[in-house]
Image 1 (cartoon, rainbow over the protein chains, first blue to last red):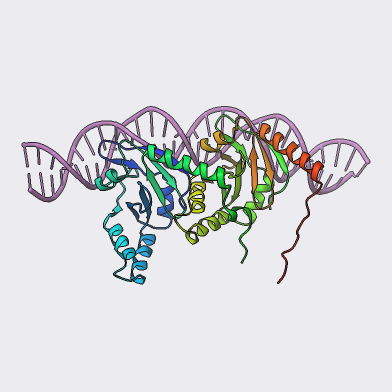
Image 2: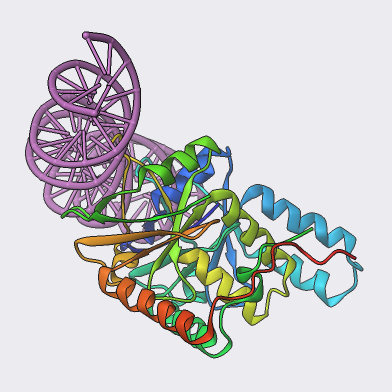
Length: 149
Length: 149
DNA sequence: TTGACTCCCATAAATTCCCATGGTATCCCA
DNA sequence: TGGGATACCATGGGAATTTATGGGAGTCAA
């Protein structure tokens, strides 16, 4: 599980430390890290090799000619398997740096099965947006009651 | 189950003892402790890893573009897996300290499936508020079992 | 040879781990 | 029932480890 938020520095070589807790989570489950363009936001999404495999498999279940399948295939094309250096860093591919407007700071945001990497700016925007929704609509219903079968 | 209230000290390293009864409850069930920003109050909420897993699984079942999913993901970003030292303490993440206005004292309040951590101030406020409601409206009607079909 | 990339070492700061202590509740036995 | 012994709890402090980050040497391709 990927949880928590942390702000890390990106150096001139586009290297950034993946938060230790994320790394630990990957190691524990013997997983490879995949980074790819988020389909929803201007950010990078990180997840496990296994979960990416799940996405790939789901393409087969779609109509091969559908728009959904097309978009998913494009997503694969912008996906990268990451290698760690001995310090726990990865080099962020240029395509992803540009897409998510990253320069020298990255915000890592664990969201359960995967995590986001935002530019500080975009992170602020999205975070305050969530706080606004929370204020207006209140907490999601399923928080308040135990899920029954 | 988490019950009862206790007042513990937070030291300069942001360490605080989790009440023994809470710890015992976790150990007995072989559970990890998760702390996260309450969606309802200015306090920290503590719960089990399993229960958090439940929320995460429910994200996949929601429309990924919905406000509910968005808020839930943000909740994960503000959640932290805790490690105990040999004395039964955890370090409270800075994000949570700030959010709940904690400095040197924490009030632990067991509420069943989870517990709250308040600043003494906020605790007083919420507590007297509940007493006031109780006085004005009388005790709530308890629904002890689900209506059977 | 130059530039880009990978791999590895170095380091300061932060975090984690471990031992120590005083106080309080609990137990046990006379 | 009293009183001492014991166990456990909350807390303090310091040592050891880990983390994030900087920098350089080696490698490969053009």
